[in-house]
Image (cartoon, rainbow, N blue to C red):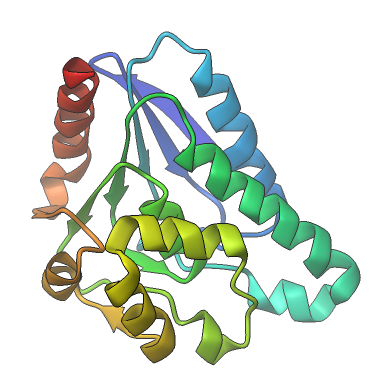
Length: 197
């Protein structure tokens, strides 16, 4: 579900949950647990990335519908906790967005201090309103912190999902990186951020 290794002293956390790293209760809990451990680890910084063709394609909507409110309410609480744990980590976190980062996946990337994205035709954005998914307050505040008030309204209300160059202009990501160099570049960014603190 989550793979961890180290590159040049930087912790690399990789989501490895199904085909598109869909966010469900178990993955949310695993993210929270991993980042709580990393808060006390000797690693000066963290890189968060995905596996396969997605960083994370967002919430597992099929499971939410299938399991109903008894699943959805506690899950959304755990999801907010996962976002907050990444956002509040007391060391730099760089997202290496290796593919689609949609809805909750975009929020998770936005909870990181920097976002690098590879240009392989993937998209990033927050189409929650169009999918009929509640937008937790923590997710809204994380997005507001990342893109600012004016851009937040545009991104949330239009539900647009953006290609990397457009996401760069919108402030959703900080850099577009060649696919084969993504994690290495993210590790360098993380190390530089850690050294500047």
